[in-house]
Length: 486
Image (tube, rainbow, N blue to C red; front, side, top):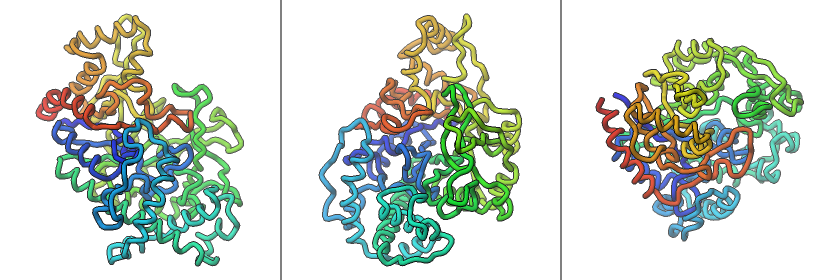
């Protein structure tokens, strides 16, 4: 059966409180997907956002962002006397700082009303939960500073477990409560998705941020100096997105050490995400084959070297240790053949993006790499211009070529964005995934992220209402159902 998916960040959903959450709007969205034959919801990472509000620079590979907790569900459980009055409900942008500040006293009030039970105590006993709670308590005590700038005893706490923790106990308990509620609410959303016939694809960044509990509590897993600062950092060399490359700043893994402990970090990380998602997309999958290693002193990504990684050993371990694991490879960009061999060895689905693979420079539009059954065909991703933005950026001659190309393939009627989406749905690919912005034909202001840039307006786009999305999906429903039944 061929499947259709929608790419939509949780943060971009409507809610009464300024950012998408795990409450009724998530269920409404899943209901709309199910009604229109969509069987996959692809998310961006749900971890606590760090630098630049990027979900790809999280504080933890395990924790969920408390920003997404449904206040209405907390009220329904009796942890709030009533659901708060709406706040920024109609905003089309997420103001992360403002929304976090507004929610903070409300979440603390819910925590004070909470009575721990056996389920909570079992959850709190997990090692990652304790480490995360301590990390957040220390971070608050240090005004939000990176752990590298904390007092020495707090920097070294994961190794020594020494120091007076009394002043931090309440803050630790607060963050354990938040994570317990996140896990509870998330599993409720996941169960509802199953009822609607929708599988959820999570997104796991290949790297972690330096200012994360992963690095603070597991320094031995990374290439760091004696003070814990990265000696080498991750990124990609100059490419389509940037003439100087992308200098992400994430620390590089210490693969020699990871081999010695049987890749424990990866087993724990992917294993936990397997309990959250039906499918896991590995962002920057190519780094399992080779990764761009940049000296931390270099201000751009132009200086660096491709280094081989033990991808086969890692993936063999994951598939052996995690039954039922389903991975998807983000395999975009200029790749050496060995990356594709690694992907194909495990029969992983890769990606094809129409915006990248339609050449409009010649006499006719040409598919640079026609889709295959095991590829996931996208019109674009969270890093691309929206389909409407991409189309309007073309020259008038190129736009005419696109329209003629669509007409020759039988898609000659309707708005161009609808015709391209319909063309995608007619593809050979077993899965087709469309960003909701492309389904709706939204222009540049709805773009989710521009690679190589940090901060606003990245990651901020949000739908004030699901009604336009529902209408746009209904328009595609015949093609989605025809694809499913083909």
